[in-house]
Length: 220
Image 1 (cartoon, rainbow, N blue to C red):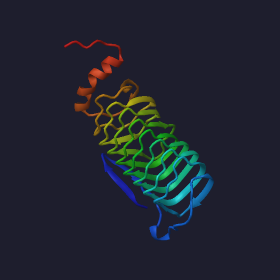
Image 2: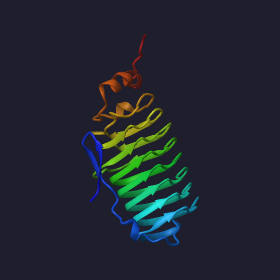
Image 3: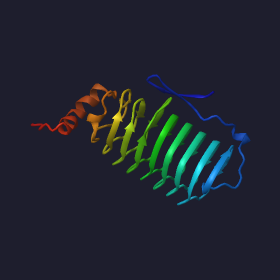
Image 4: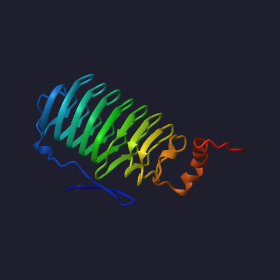
């Protein structure tokens, strides 16, 4: 097992597959699929509609813009340098899955369950992310979320070094959600993040936002 250590005691298990055993064969996300041990790269799947399961695979440098996948089950899968703008993934179950260095503007994802899901260095501006359940860890690292909506059960979700300016939080729960290293100035819905962790510095900068949401008038 390979674990990723993120600091502050956060760890998560990485996808488990052997790159040398992956096969580079014809594959599309179209229709129903149930595949494993695939190397999928440099493909164009824009606007494809499909549903199914993908396991022990690497998806690299692929155009998945506008793709509609529902439901989708991922297990030991890494997405690297992919285009996800305008895509919609619904009914997602993700286990030991990574999405790294990808553009996902306007990306819509509804997570039924996230078990060690790591999203790193992605541009998620105008995205809509909904979380129903986290088992293990769900980590966003060095991601941007300009004018994005993040909703659902955010308990134990980690936002590490992310820019959350303009984010609208619509959390049902947030106990243990870690925001301590991220920029939260300009975010809304902070009152719904009861139980989340922020730093003393963040608390000072967020005080006016929280007061405004509570209906208070802040005078100079």
